[in-house]
Length: 398
Image 1 (tube, rainbow, N blue to C red):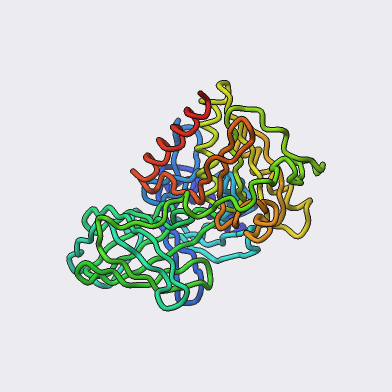
Image 2: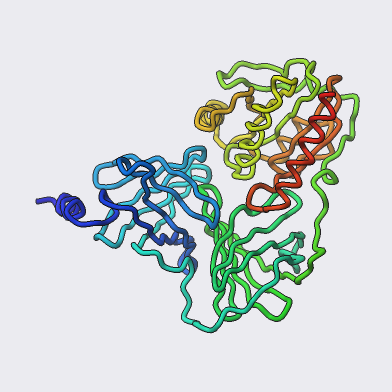
């Protein structure tokens, strides 16, 4: 009898990953020969009759769709063009890979059953306490860029994120062992790992992204830590340029331009489907649209996509629009690059971040520009941002 069939039968009889009960797995992506990125994969049921799967990054839970593929299960991200393929080796272990179609990468992974720590360490010393807020510098010796570190520690467990001038690092989660700190995030598009040594009010360590990028980072505890505000980075350099002249493509491939701006307030979102911060912003904009559309709010999204041809770019965008259930018009602006986006929007100094949002009044004039997006992983920062945006919308609707 086929060994995989025997394993499936064994799983049905026993409790485990396949069919029988809620379970949590510690999964590790092999980013390279020396570095693994851990995350949790949970199998759960809302009604005790059907099973679902989700990735856990601290407070974030990402629901995956599942599909049987011979002796494997394909777990797909709803909005991102990537998926996990896993196959059981035994009741307590599986192997597989992460297929990242955004970057054309296939990265091996393995999973072990059990609610174990996200990061393991040979050092079992009492975890040092760290501050809640740090002034951070990445790549201090080579093109440095600033950030603010926000952390919440519970014994040897730690959650947090980094605010940057162009967006946040979303939901990071990890552990503290003695004077060592470890954090990671995996969301189907990004694969982040952070490590640091704790030395008094100072953190110093490494940041790894994907299979090859790495840089140093340092943080100094500072309750007043700050970066430039998102409305300082992008500004108008040519007020005579008409936004209605921008050439775009519809999801069907037809050439078009944005319709005249006659609404009291219109948001132009510059984004990409490959960008988790853009997804966070889109989810927020959907709520704004539902709340204020009947009062006069319009939203238009212009996406810049990966893909060798316009047809491939449109296919990715159409999939995103359908899966994310976006209720307002979405257009293709071009290839996924800040340079391309800057050419499409020549009235601005540059597009330095995806997403970037333009807020227009009823005359079609840009009255506010928000660069980047610090989302729900940033706590109070996100709440303050929502209040600011709603105040702008309400004032323009008057």
